[in-house]
Amino acid sequence: MSPALDVSKPSVNTLARPLVERLLAEAGMLDVQVRPDESGVCIVDAGIAVQGSVAAGLLIGEICMGGLGQAHLSVSGEAGWPTWIEVRSSQPVLACMGSQYAGWSLAASKEETGGKKFFALGSGPARALAGKETLFDDIGYRDTAGTGVLVLEVDRPPPRVIIDKLLRDCRLSAEGLTLILTPTSSLAGTTQVVARVLETALHKAHQLGFPPGNIVGGAGAAPLPVPSPDGVEAMGRTNDAILYGGRVHLNVRGDDAAARELARQMPSRNASDHGRPFADIFKAADYDFYKIDGALFAPAEVWVSNIDSGNTWHAGGLDMALLLGLWRKEA
Image (cartoon, rainbow, N blue to C red; front, top):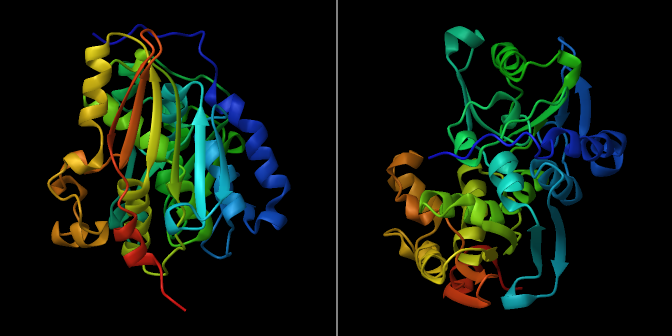
C-alpha cells in the first residue's frame, strides 16, 4: 500500500529557489548562459553554447536535490584518481527520489517539433509539481509551489511543444519555470550526473522493495571523470564512475534482516553485465537502456547501518583498475 500523502513535507521547489537564484546571479563566474525563451521561461545553458564548469555542476546537483542535499569536491588522489564528488542528505528519500531522480520522460515527434524528434528525462524539483510518476504515490509526496526548476540532460534546447507541456503539467506561469540544460559531454553535465551516486542507491532500494520511509540518512562518493566530447562515451564515463567507483552509506530503521538483505542485493556487481565499460554495454544493447540488466544501475560498494540495532553491513567493492584503464593515460 502506498503511504498517505504528507502535506507537511517541505517544498523542494521552494528550498531549491535560493540555489537557482545563485546560479542565475553568478552565471558569468560559473560559465553558464541565462536567457528567457519566447514565452518567458528562464533557460540556463550549462554546456551547449558555453563551456559550463564543475562548480556549476555541483550547484546544479544541489538544485536537483531540492535544497535537501549537499555536494562538494574532494581532491585527495584516493584509489589513484584525484577528484571525487561527495554528496549527503539527511532527507535522502525526498532529496533523491522526490526531486533528483531523472524519472520524467519527455518526448516529441518530428511532426510536433517541426524538425528533429526530441527526447529527454527530466530531473529535479519540478517533477514533484507534475507528479506524473507512480513513484510519487510510493513516497507519498507532491509539491504545490508557485515556481519550479527542471534539469534536462540534452544537447539542444527543448522545443516549444515540450515547454508548453511542462507549464501545463506543473501548473506554472512561464515566468515561474526555470529549465537547466546540461549535456553530459560538458563539465557541468558530467558533474551533476556523478552527483547522483546517492540517488542511484535510493532508486535501487526502491526497486528492491525496501520501505522508503525506513531510509533516514545517506552519503555517497564517486570519482569525477573528465567529460568526453562523444555523447555515448561521456554517458559511459558518468555511469562507470558510479557503477565501479561509487560508494554509498545508508542509515535505515527496521529489522536487521531487511537491512542486511538490502546491503547484499544493492551493489552493481549483482548484475550480469558487471565488469564491462558501460559504453560497451549500451552499444551491445542497441542503445536501449531497457535491454540492460536493471541490477547494474547501482553503486559499486555499499554500507547499510541500522540505527535501531546499531549494526552495519558492507557489500560490494570498487573496481578502480577498470576505471583507471579507461580514464588515465601515463605521461
